[in-house]
Length: 390
Image (tube, rainbow, N blue to C red; front, side, top):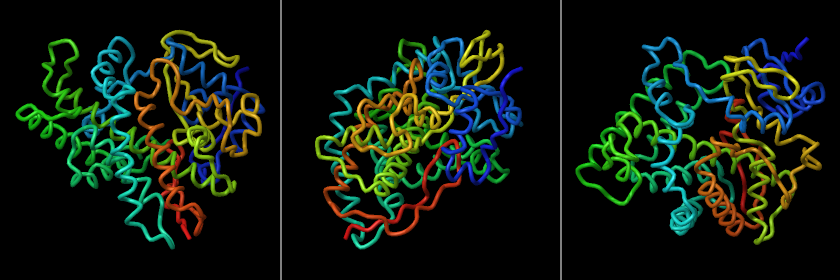
């Protein structure tokens, strides 16, 4: 008889603090069938890692229904690298990958420092919302710089991104669906116009680089694929960085921890591990695969619960404690295998620079009220984190 779980991923108690619930499940089984969503769920680190590494478990996009109504949303996903497997994944990823190589990321470091300093100049040290006034605008300004999007469109990018990613939750409401469709339509229209403009007048940015390559030449992408790539980079880069910094800072302040200057990279890794910004990543079996003692049949879905994996006590000592200088730290926040996060080098640099700037500016940084949750499970984060620097 196969193991089963009735864990409700929409339960307010689970959304508020999933980790005790995930620990109970992990103690019962590494993998279990979830009847409510018709998929397997993983609860330990080895199983979550196996799901991401095994090429027989793929990202196989199926259009959301009703397909005609959801076409603006579906279009952005069926053409993006994260929803495809090789060789399509390789073809879609390769033209974008150069923008995230080590040298290019290092060239962005002074800009990240400048943006961080400017945002911190504008806050009230006596009390400010570190999410709305710092963690949210910083990564989208950095991605906008990389893509070549003008700063005056940053607010629109943030709004579109936040509307689209709420569709990834287990049970989006009709209002969430309508907002996502509208945002996907507007976002795609804006990127198409930007691509057309860059073809006429290329500049030194990623959109120009993608736009000037003919689709039928090596490294070339169709307009639909360029739009999907740009939207993915903005959504993934923005949402992950906001939530990692917000979640990690709450954990760090509650733990009364401060990293030494040379240990900031370790602190960033612990922020990524301790309260995972992305909690769930799904795959579909293309043939029978054994994971965690169960057999995933062809066509069945299995979701790696990354937050559960990153709190597995068999892998992490004091797994439920924020250890600011934890080392080693084999968390799965960026994934593993062919879908390892393309933007990981940029995210690590950006998080290290933004955390350093914040703590240097406000060495006595402390909570100034309770954080306000976004109320979502898959993309876990805070809507507001009030702090004081005095």
